[in-house]
Image (cartoon, rainbow, N blue to C red; front, top):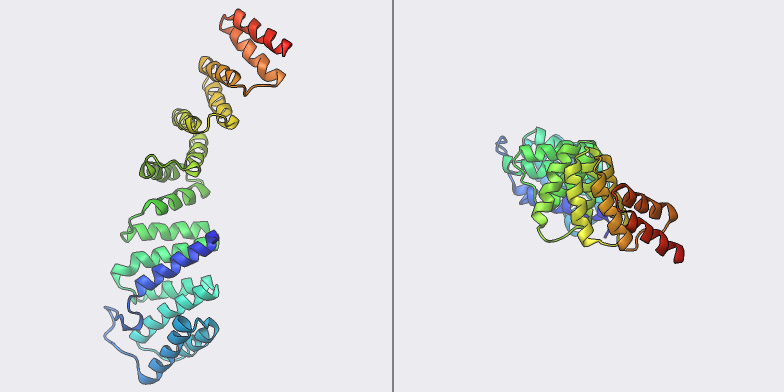
Length: 284
């Protein structure tokens, strides 16, 4: 199952949970508690088409009939929520967002379900790659009382990274890393490496790179990143130790790489070791 399909499934599950008993859910600000007979008949056909038959085109036609009529507040609330579900299934993201936003604005979604609805809207925007709007509604979700779990923290870290708010992205990515504990996730470490580098936090970058290197001792790019980080901080002795370890691990094979190690030995008053390397490589 692809990422977008997974998102869609999560949105639908969240929407159904927020809808509760569907048409039976009354709105606190609405004194009406039932459908009129004609409207109720059409609504039931729409619900049957959507929920049971999975005929979303037919369900959408019934929805259009309902929306063209004068509805009381109870009817309109139920219609908007069912319409949002149908639009998601039909791939009409903007239609679903309009329905959910209208239901929120008109008070048809109880306060206890508002946070979930904001979250659903955020996920719909994310399906459409609208990162800014997705982040806007993730913030509304949190403001309404939403408490991020591990996966939602990861989503926030990625969203903030994509809008170049690196410090906030770091906050969420570090929380994900803490939540993971000993459960190593390469994507989390890769994101933190990118973020620490982006904000020029050399101390945290060095620390995370060393953690990654323990897990990936033969991965050349992490060795290079550690050495480069020490070079950038003018810590030549540490950079030399990294280069030496790379040489001993057999990761340095090119002439310019080997000469760099030789020059390091000479610089740190170890000409004998420099000569040993030269002799070994010349005889190889």
